[in-house]
Image (cartoon, rainbow, N blue to C red; front, side):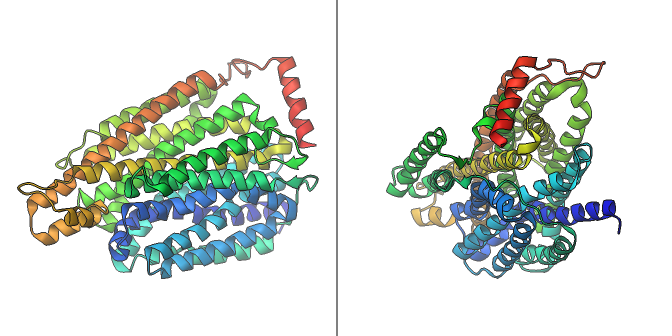
Length: 524
């Protein structure tokens, strides 16, 4: 095998590692209704099935990238695959909601190692003029897993128990392990400065505490001691993290101040996080609507979830083609505006609405938010110097994961609160407190319980309550997209390419030189 063929074969091995992550991102959403019924999970536990994974993933992305740079990227990639495989097996064999949450946490640890090191391998294996194509291969592998997840989950759930959706990861991981071990060269980065362990603990603790408070608020009550401790403690830890990062102690910082000081990188990362918040919040609530209200089975839910993911791919590809002519600012703002309009359309669905309108608005959400996501990442990555490519990429991914966690936590909590408040309580035809407690766990259990009662009116009441919660979450998502459009238009640079091949608004020479000097000095 020639050296060039070996490099691309190594990239293919790396692509396999992120394929399983893309699969896991959407495959769980389709299985959630079955898991909810089988394990008797509450809405808060359903959120933790997703958030325990995303929470750990977002919290550990940066330290995992730092450790891989320091002790060997190949070694940590192999370790990440082993951990991800063990987590997948644990998920499949879990017999309780708490056990599945623990298994999903372990999956998050494995994914946190794999994602930044996959991007690092691109930097190690390829020269600058080849990296665009190589990054496209990695990105396509991740995106390929998104539409495959719902279909694969639907097929498996038609014939097997829900644990099969996690076992499907194991053969892919086995192939990736052999390929990485034999094809990927070992490499390390800078070992000069010590890791900022205090910064890592503060940032991880802030995210975990705040997310716990948001998810458990509707379940326990916003005045509950644990909820308040989570929200207040998360804010305090976040403030302490910001203060700690402002002091130069000669450590490797969690957030490189030189990188964060670049407006294109900073606001591009925030744009990507905002897009992830809107997209993954919708990905959490839509499958429940398809199962509980439209009555789709597992495979039908998987197939009907595809338009949103296909829309995401269309938005990415279209934006890539139009970017040189219109620039990130215009296309990013337009993408958020399309997403906002689509969410408003989705908020108008009723119990009687068919699937056609849902397919239209979910496709539009994917297209618009996908465009905004690409524009944000494009600006952020374009501002990175070569010396900070791996660290900067990990920070962007961490911001995206924070957005995903907040999207599922905040919108899931809102869905839960509005759904429960919409159930009829007391009076003629109303539910007792015990019935509300039983039916209010989640819409799937609620519809199943109503169907067992033989009351069509009760089943409709449960569905109507859920549609009310869905409408509220989509209005919030629309507001997030509108805020994102304003952010993009004000903060992102105009990076159009003129007919002469120049940027529409070139950087000022003095400012550019000063920025480059600061980043290179930080890299040294």
